[in-house]
Length: 259
Image (cartoon, rainbow, N blue to C red; front, top):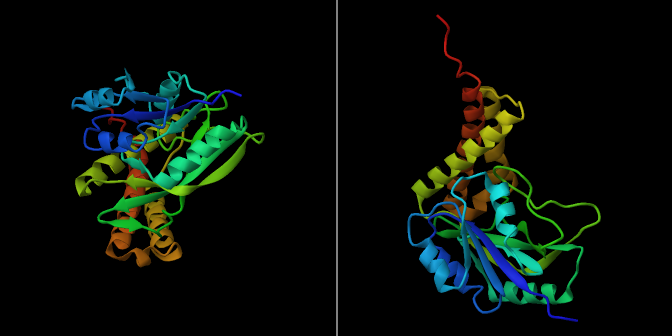
């Protein structure tokens, strides 16, 4: 039996701050690094070249799901392992991944527990941990769906899902501005996607969902145990929830008055 090959795949844009540290955690034990860039203007491409990555560019942004599909079309290895530039693979998770690939299970998708560092603290509650993400599978088995945001790996009843031990470390936000810009982008993509499906919204829906979000994260999911960061993250998440519903509502009111 030949040894199965493993690729790590990323979609990126202007990730010079994170990319090197990310790729250092997979250097030397993956067979292929595939990066799909959406139009970086920093030195992302140069950093990728340092690691021998296969670097492709698609600046005509189609949404997260389609961009991942395009990236996967360039993967030649037997297995594909998805990473984001702000993530790091721990030594324990590395070994679990290599063991899983060696088993060559053609019908299995592997998920990991992701631990996020937010505003100076690892978040262990708020519903954020364990944040299980499907990230490793045989390249020919499946791919991401077409969602513009919050994309997911497509699964069927015939596929098995196994959880690998070892955390995937996630450095979620650089600072408050990064959070606001990132959440605004997600809200816009969410509203666009819902609008295309003919969905509508209202301000009252936004308020109700925002309040429910805060209660769930801070109280039900024990975000208060994460200290001030837990409170801040719960409050910001509630705000982001309101914004996406408000965005969809605003889109319904854009018709200009007729004379």
